[in-house]
Image (cartoon, rainbow, N blue to C red; front, side):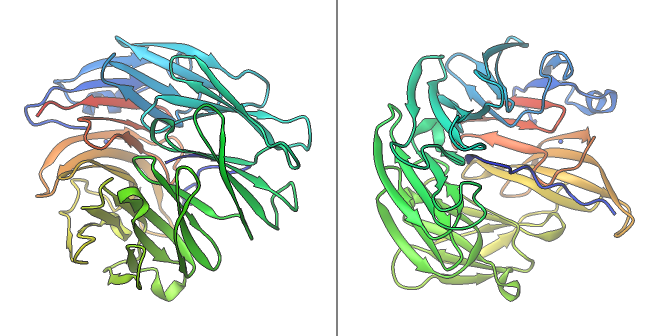
Length: 402
């Protein structure tokens, strides 16, 4: 999902490798170390860009346009277009302090521009990926600006977040405003506190997780359902009609609530605490990640699950990201642990693509300069046979031909 909120940053892992098998691979590598290059697939056509020179800041999100064979890499302050192994900056921050957010799948990006009214709030400027200006977003009355923004796939959903009672957002009510690509205000909802926002993979709905309930909204702000309970993680699909929810209570963090908008949720108990939840856009399949690099294929309709085969790394693992490429293929980012707690570190990471049978389609290894729980990360569009994986220092673009 594409989200940016004021004063938030990736969670750092506390101290103490994308597809082969007779397929065509194209790899874009920014700042690869010597060891990572040595381990990269020999069949890959590799584009190398020096991190310190060509992409001077960590990639926050990536997208690929298969029609033009163009990759887009977004840092917090610059948008880069990559063609034929060359990166070119196509958008730079319009004002000091502005922040860039690229919509999942590309198509549109947004600038969060510091507001002159209360400090630390932003106005939002929407821009087509071609560079065409789309709209300026700003509320007509106080607080005028925004503290956060959620973008759906290719800009199908645009939701701004504004604190109403305390402009710093430490407490009080929050306004969630739903907008069209051309800047029309479609609807608003006021919530009693700041809530976790989770956008559907296809950008058609958003899930809000509050202290007492979970709510689902369509892209135009229509409420689809609400469910009592406090949840810490979730996923939403099927036009907002299906959700996976992980309770916040310590004794229930190994459970997944499967909710279809009516009656009560189906409760599925997993073998480990739940870390990540993903759904295919139509809701026909799900994957749940757990502790120790374990992952499980879950059938949302029946509540049955099967554990995926152990990933092909020797060390103990932490799954940093996971995405469906299609119904039967997963792209997974991992961190590899060195040593045993509490005297341990996370010096390496990897990207791997596996199918439902556990066959490894691709694997790469990378040195990790600074371990974050969200890196290596993966950007992929369901049904599109390509993906981009990235760490703080590098990015890999892989194209699959079945």
